[in-house]
Length: 276
Image (tube, rainbow, N blue to C red):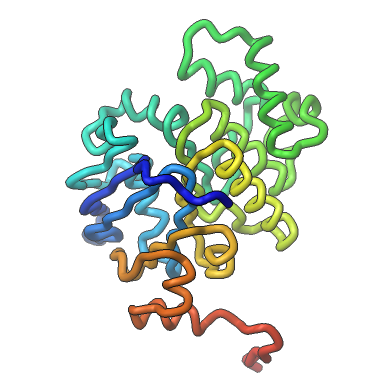
């Protein structure tokens, strides 16, 4: 992968999330800072519940109505103020500027619309006067770009007719239809077998490399971080506890939590203790 540039495409300062419920208030994200530069993949890693997915959804304002997101700054490309963007502005930022790939592809796809209709709706939401014939041409090209060999059949079908890996390819195609500068992928291979996981991660990293995009990749897998990312952000209990170039963090971790994560990764040939 080519080296990232010095052009910052995303700057986040002091991001915090509060969630209110009948059982009380929780603060899953507390004071997160992060930067993303053109052409790089940054991994966000940590155990379940550490706030990594909530961080990404907070940036994109995709959390529920019982959530409150605050930040000193969430800035795209130095000139778009996401922190103060209205709901209408966010609808254009999501898709045109930042594409999102969720954990569960079937939760991202509309079960009652054909795949072709979903591509059309994405394009229509961001551009007036979109013709269905042209929308279909674009959709076919996008499906081919993510390695789908029978795009016509997929386009005419529905989400329930797709395998998990195929559905995630469709979601990636939808997320990149409007050529966003940034992809945010939240555990994009959850529930897929190892072979399909590798294919999806290769696909996403290729889209970043070939199109000059940037990506925030949320994962719990340090092996994925080591293979695909250039920098890593380690989160614990809603806070960033360590960040830096991947090899620096892997070889010389400074925080005890990072060291414990690295120790927990099975080594080749290592026998696992199985509870009986």
